[in-house]
Length: 334
Image 1 (spheres, helix red, strand yellow):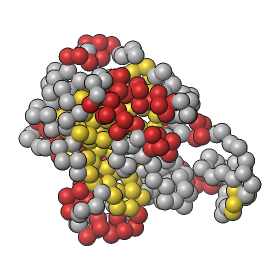
Image 2: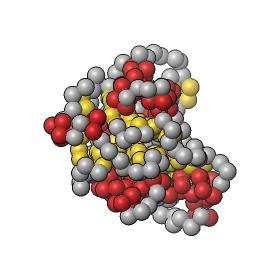
Image 3: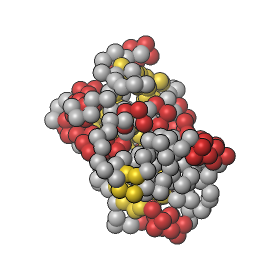
Image 4: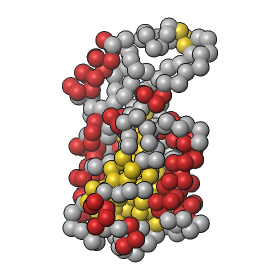
């Protein structure tokens, strides 16, 4: 795999602790997590601060409020946070009315015995925990939704229904089964939909987290890979951590983050672990849109992505003790 010139200056083999790494060029999120760590915060604090920054800044419209409206025009959020020391996890999915999804995920971890809360009940839990209920709709999301309706609800994620979903809006009813192969065109760089973050401190404590507003025009109630343990992210302080981004409906079927961590546990370097996790999905869905970042317990890191329409190179951010500022890295897809 070929890395950018910035990466050549700081080779993978010479990384030192602590480390913050996240998907996509979300610079401010990296900086927020790094600052939290440098200010004495825990790895969980850093993950939460980093993902929360993206939620407030609406990173690329694919994280936080005001983006990716579903078929009814509503924006809902998914998030997850994992403690690599204790294996505790908190997650929320299809969260409504609450902007700080990663904060609610951490509340699930710290104030319940559960792992994942979903839908309206998750929102009620959040309000009971003191999170403010707000409208997640913005002028931008209203416009996206309006244009989608005017375009006969194209694209959408329906299949084998009547009326023909490739030409008409719903409501839909079950129809004849027709073999379709259009998914690669539905999920692309403008719907990469996730910040995934890994934080490793100087003592070897690991945490990982994700936050997303999912896919544009998703069917209400859809949950992707981001809040699913082992799919969107996974962390084990005895082995490493990983976080995935891309077509979550496909990727979650392979638990790529869990696979990558187990490969690192068995001795694989992070780049090789990432590449193997992508290759496993590629065997079944050769054109899928997706990427993954990996880090081991010594602070070495890597990334991999599947070469697909609109994705020939994957960009991610890194902060560590060798640089005062977050660095943009890239890896060529295969």
